[in-house]
Image (spheres, rainbow, N blue to C red):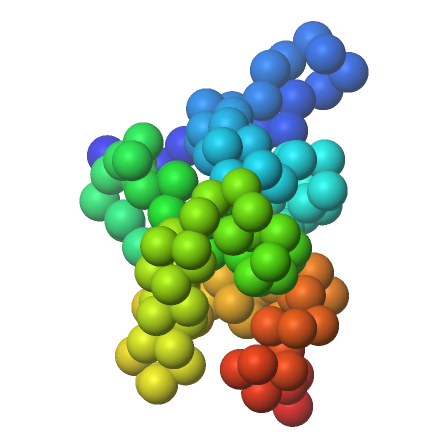
Length: 133
């Protein structure tokens, strides 16, 4: 199966690709407006997803957990908990700890992306002792 490329659209003439629309919807569902995430970062997220699911398109249900993790990194625990609840915060924090324990995977890549894109909330940086070095 040939992998489709993502498309941002062009002056409203051509629409955004399905993967970017799904990511935008998933970001909205966790109360992070997609306009607050640069297009290059969103393209990187969908490309990481395609790398994680190399034989097929990422399943639609895969977008929400990844958007939740990224939103938590961007807005911090308090704002994320206010909308998504403490259970979701605990889940995301456990995923970050698991990723930072050297287990890597797409969660670690998303944390690193948020950090390098300077979208990581300062409280998250301090709590997990993150650095770019």
